[in-house]
Amino acid sequence: AQKVTQAQTEISVVEKEDVTLDCVYETRDTTYYLFWYKQPPSGELVFLIRRNSFDEQNEISGRYSWNFQKSTSSFNFTITASQVVDSAVYFCALIISNTGKLIFGQGTTLQVKP
Amino acid sequence: GAGVSQSPSNKVTEKGKDVELRCDPISGHTALYWYRQSLGQGLEFLIYFQGNSAPDKSGLPSDRFSAERTGGSVSTLTIQRTQQEDSAVYLCASSGGAKNIQYFGAGTRLSVL
Image (cartoon, rainbow over all chains, first blue to last red; front, side):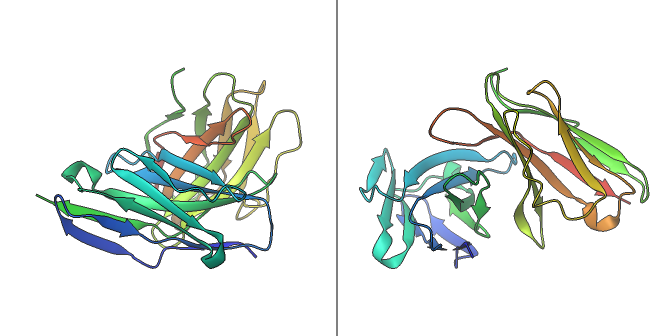
């Protein structure tokens, strides 16, 4: 069975702190895709990143970076120098090749205080 | 349109009534998905349309739920004889192209009284 676990339910940091959101996934398939989405208070899920199972390169986009490690089945997300606007619920998700459906973790609520 | 559009944004109904939720995908996207977000269950897949293929209905929770996609574009999710446990935010997404990235609408918040 496929599963995504985000063990951190809520995280609270002070602005400018770095924060890492953990994501662990389970699948027996060799071809799969991992995603992170952000859900701000407005409710709309915003796509952040997609990574396929054959590409373990870490990625950096501005203050955001992602660490994909197949050996530990993890796809962690780090926000550097957090800002109040980063406050949101963040979801990690998995798609098994050709199934189309996203399997979501339970989400991590990030609160960044000024 | 520029993004996925869902209507209505909020729907309040009485237990036992039928409701219809609408989704307009991003123009040109061939795949359309429905998900449900509730406090107890998180984000759950409901149904997936891909082009002219038969939809994947494996996530529909009961036979009270159905969905159709007309002309390969607009989709309607119908819930018959609504129950209080159907209260949730219903999210629609669409995708197109090889990267399979799903873009979401703002959702419809359904409250069953």
